[in-house]
Length: 290
Image (cartoon, helix red, strand yellow):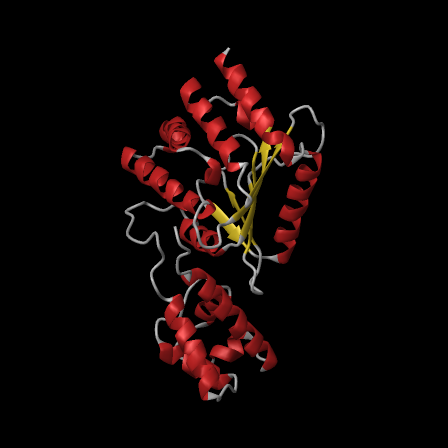
């Protein structure tokens, strides 16, 4: 699978450029939009990469406000705006997205490296189809989701996982797998055996690093999932976690990125070396058969 266009990355990049230009012009957001055809909320969302301007004319008038008159620079940013407005690869999948999910998918698809941990299950990017199906089925009566939602969500999760094995710049993934999460038998023996085998196979890829955090270690363990997405190219590292309200929280605020990074680093430091992961997974597979 080849790398796909990344509209969200374009939006984030354009937003950063516009934020820098505004600061160089010594303008607040309120001052920047005064008399223009869009409001403060729109500019704020554009600067943070959450949306694009609906019209290229809006971008042009903003650049004029910032004193950008070089035709080549203006044309480049308008072209970037056009690319940022294109459809994401998952558009039209029919999935009823959780709140915050489109933003998360966009950032994830733009990431060069992801570091992830989950306290109770195998992280989504590492799940087999049967395991992902079983996880959704367990939560279905609690979350009151439909069968269609579950099916589409599983399909989407499998599509996301293709980034690990694509031919063009496969995604780098570093995951800390919590031992209790690995021992949480979802879907039965056959599902777990397949999941262990898939993890062992993925652990052998050059772009994938898997570590097991023992349940008897006594060190730090995060009480919620941790997802750190490193975009590169001067774009901000972004973190994500699921909330108790069935939503997906995504932010690139330095304080939260730093906090999540400390969480992950603490758990990685206490986890077993990557070289021991495949042996441990094979051990789990033998135990579940007994």
